[in-house]
Structure formats: C-alpha cells, structure tokens
Image (cartoon, rainbow, N blue to C red):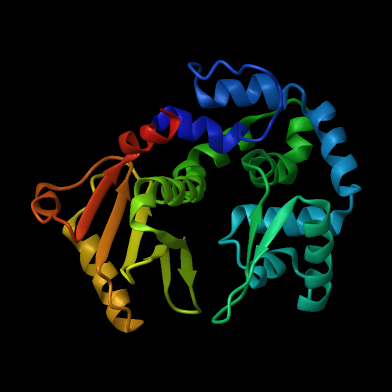
Length: 260
C-alpha cells in the first residue's frame, strides 16, 4: 500500500494505460516522464497557455504549503496579480481553492501528476532538456516524504469518510490559521469532534505527537472527543498502549480497505 500511495502521488490523474508500479519510483519517472518531457510539456503548455506567471504560481503551490500568500511570495508577485491568476487557473481546472476565514486561502491541484510536474519537472526544465536528470533525482529524493504527505493526508480523509460513515460524518478536512494547523478536523452528526495528524516519515510516531494535538486543541479551545493519528511506519509502544475509543491509530495498511 505504501508503494501504491507513492506512485499515486506521482502518476495520479494520468491516462497512460497500465503503469508497472513494481518498478522503483525514479525509474518510472525517468522512463515515462523525463524521456518524454517534450511531449508532456506540450500538453501542459496547451493547458496553461504557456504563461510564465501561471507556471511560477503553480510551482509555488507545488513546493509550498498551498497557502496563497506563500505561493505569491515564491512567485514574487502581488496579491492582486496572484488572485486574478488563481481565478483563471481555477476556471481552467488545474487547481481548486479552499477558503479560510482565519488565514490565507489554500490551493490544491486537481490531479497529483500536475502537482508533481510543477514541483519537480517544470522548474528544472533546462537540465532535463539537455538530458541531465541529476537535479530532478536529487530534489525528488530529498523532498519525497514531505511531498507525499499531502496525498497521505487526503487519502486519510477519504478513509475516515468511509470508516465513520455509520457515525454520520458531517465534514472531514484540514484546519489552519496563521499559527496552527491540523491535518484532520472532522465532526459527526452526534456532535463529536475529531482532530488528528498524518505523518509520512520513516520513523515510528511517539506519544509527543498526541501531546502536540492536545495542546493545539487547548489553544484553539476545541473539545476534541477523538484523536486520530495516521503513520507511515507505525507507533511507539508507549503510544500504542494509550489506544482506546478516544485515540485511533492507523498505518498505511489500514488504507488498503479503500481499495478493497
């Protein structure tokens, strides 16, 4: 399942027929994307009109936290220029806007592949055109886990929607303001509040992650009835010993039920 998540973060949304996901990620990137760079670039240029402003903003979204002010800062543009471009990109269907009353709005790509392209391919086009893929490989290797965590979070939302369907889940998304962020913020029909985090890292999650969630809840004056934590590599024995009806712990293996 871990391998499927990682490949989906790269190729999700493409219509290229069957992809041999048994092969290493970068081998597939090299064969299916980098070696066909010019053809794919032409398709994406048709989508964006090849406008440098659009590409700068899209790269800012792909490499940042998704907040509009972060993307505009990376692209070195004003909010007025950025807002107009974002409106146009949303109309094209490349990105989606999620509004916030407490902070900057957030921007999400309509497909994982487009996010991958603007994070690792579009900004490094000079070397790719010359057949040099070293910089792409280095950036992908260094940022892979961080990059995949957003997909892991989104899949965790879908898992909760399915697994808690019987409880009448009213909403399940992320929460953010200028100082705090929660990967998971959900409410049920019986007025239960669920908050949680997703950690796509190569180490077990410790009790300190639960403590952090409790502190954020207190700071935001949220009465959390259930805490949920999703982990790539599992949990420490201390944290597992605390698991009960008010603390749910999940790993990537649990997400397999969505496929089944």
